[in-house]
Amino acid sequence: MDTILKIGTLNLQNSHRNRNSNFSSDVAHHIEQEQFDILGTQELTRNYQKDISNRLSNYHFYGGYRYGSTWPFQKMKLLHNVNENNNIITHFQIENEYTLMLPFIPDNQKEFVQSIYNRTIMPRIVTVAFIKLPEDTICMLNTHLDYGLPSIQKKQLQALKNLVFHFQKTYPIIITGDFNMESSSSSFKDFCSDLNQIKRVEVNDSTHMNHHSAIDHIFIPKEWIILEQGVKELPFTDHKEVFVKIKK
Image (tube, rainbow, N blue to C red):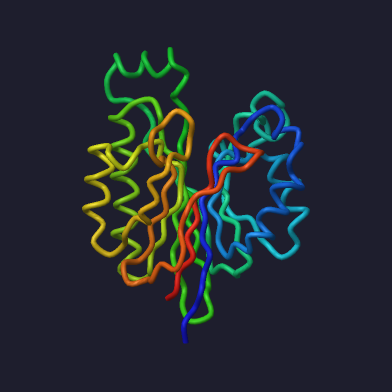
């Protein structure tokens, strides 16, 4: 029996207006209207995530925060504002989920100083969820990678690749995320070519105003059939959504 799935990735932009939940109802309405089965998100802060999830009774949100859930990051507003997650949103049940830290600290002093000066050094995480579909369970990785240093991006891609190689022994794999890399990046090209059981959905339209082509990407198992794919511009974020409808 064929299964049809709609999968997306969407950076929801950690901005002042969104932290104040000005667009929570719009985001929730969009997710329901598009009838996403699985959506990977980036840059959700606690209040914004809570307000959106309260409006989506048929969906569940999975994944932790980059600075965890300790007291200061729950109570102190300044820290609260930078404590983002990469939530996976789905109406399916899951078997398990957890959040892992990716490498984010430069190896050499020059890059370390540069990352502090540019304010790009911050924990980067990947949310892992084992999602129960009608006929099997898949493993989904959702992430948001560094934008400041190519050396750190390369390390983070290697960490993702290690996870894929580990889990693909047991599960079909999908990856969603804001990679902060276009498909022409040499590190990203190497990453794609090394993934022998999954493929990037070939959406190349720009997904952010500062880039000529997509930096937000979706990967699916090679045997899945793509029925529809594309990008969508939305009023509540500076990124475009990437989506794909597949048959498996």
